[in-house]
Length: 318
Image (cartoon, rainbow, N blue to C red):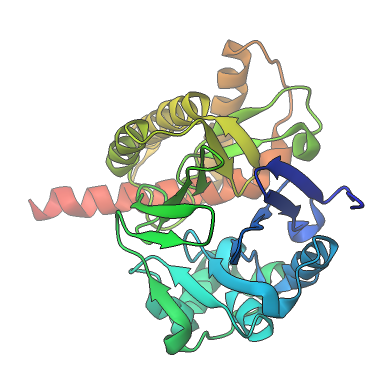
């Protein structure tokens, strides 16, 4: 089989397809499990469909081969293309967190929320989501399973990044498909730097450091060796969990120190850039300009502001 640059063999019949989100290498990936029932994990955005299906074609997967499409959560970069994927994969069922199912069947509120975050750029960045027929949607609760052949996948409710987020254990790969729940792995492929590391995502609107802590504690008790990030690739379990925990606490502490009513995104984003530089320096990496990360840092700043506003309202209501 030809192995083009956008396909990565993860072993055990699992492949990652680089979806080239916004034209960026090493940014967002879908995973394909070549088992008795072919399973795709993450569809990427609506405008990443050509890349997804090109990768599936390279793997010899026709649309009618796909049995299940699983989205870890319903943010547009993970599930925005679910409607288009399901329309083409006519035999497939969509597997989704119980809090996300209604947004897949009726994506209007999902689109409205994304538009509030991204403004007029939302369609250019992601394309427009399409509805998935309700009868083709399967919900998986915490601890539920799905047998796809040689392996049985297990689902874990994993809030902290999003309330509508689950992670998926693949015992045959000794790996957890983690979406954004166990951080983002910044790859050399994406940054151009000579090192890689894991940092959490605090993008709008559900960042909750206490939930992150509880999810990481729960996942530490689940037996697996590897974390498969949607952004991007593979990390050792403890590296990913420790990086997510440390970063989530540091970012929560940062906004607690910085926040005041009326503060805008720009000073929060600048503070995050400075924190990233200092954090990397403490790990032995001196990077003068971290703006290559602004695709996340600006969204992280927005998410931290929403988190701080929620905390302020909660305190006022006590």
